[in-house]
Length: 173
Image (cartoon, rainbow, N blue to C red):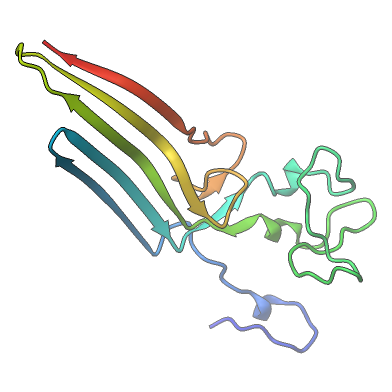
């Protein structure tokens, strides 16, 4: 078992397992209800307990010497003693800068919401008016990009899910 020692020496005894890109558990729900001429459906999925590595926060994607066109890091300073990002060194990244690219990638995502109304007709055809939202809401502590990724890595080469809102009309004849 690896433990953190407080002897002041940084060595292999200080290693800590951060997590895994494989979630502890996943789940989802897909339901459809109808009442008279109205119908409603929703699809929700979640992944909890997964670790992701953000290429946006990686050393290769950042210029640690300035804040121009970069992420706004919450650096440690004497007046801001946070534990998020160590103070950068002159001329380069802070020690162990790769550690700042690991995040809790747990999320819950509403994938689809659909609300429809079928207009009754007597001629043997039907008309349904509907509103639909695809990927409208994501709940996650990681707010840089969409944490859903098969590899556990997010960054410039991982596509983002885009929220789409539709108004439609279905005709059956």
